Image (cartoon, rainbow, N blue to C red; front, side, top):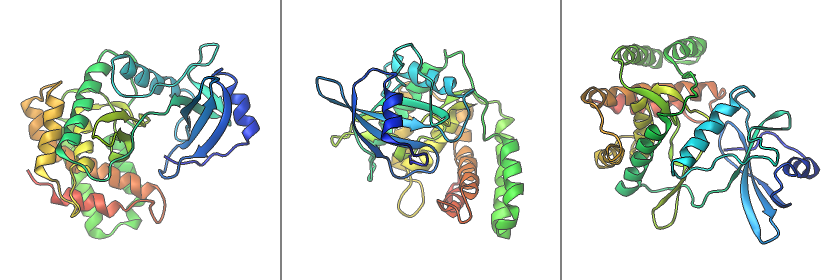
Length: 304
């Protein structure tokens, strides 16, 4: 999360009138992140202060905003710990602020974890299983923006910035991803970016919220598990701790049992998921905002 778009207090007050939730008391930019602009907004409801999150979308257009709204609303309706966008007084939940798609959502309880244990991973797996089940009935969809063609064109565009070993490794991983796609594994709507900084836990270790659904798309279901394992189950030395990985998978299978072919493809998909995030990091700038080398080292450490 971050704050790239700025505005005046008066402009924000005019925007908030559409929701009728109270008077503006405070607005604070949320530091960190590399994609959308986020602010914590406090409103005086008349019976007490209520906190919200204002998200100004920087990465996609107005035509895609309704899809993300439907995903979050569907998950909330199915009882999962997410925050869906609020509707305005005249029923709009996809709104415009500063000329960009914008959502106003309740601020969820909890904070991001620094240290992860097996129970945390179990809850994350359970959330993913519940989300996949809940979204299976949603009629809306969105094409995977990180498909094989995107990976190949991105690799070509950054080729001159890569060392020979990096270029060779990524080329090999793209070939592996092509073989995985040919397996025709179960697909559906996924979160697509469930890193530790997109989950909120209480001090007692209870998952209270999952945020940032702006990578949600139609993809291989276990892509979500692979992405989560690569972040949640990684040790300080950049390898995967098997006990954490097993807990995350066990949590998922409380909701949906993995097929044999999915289990066999999971480690290869962890490698190709690491390649995907290495590529997005290369695209974040020169030098990159986050080191792609971390993902490439992780991919090298993953063996069946």
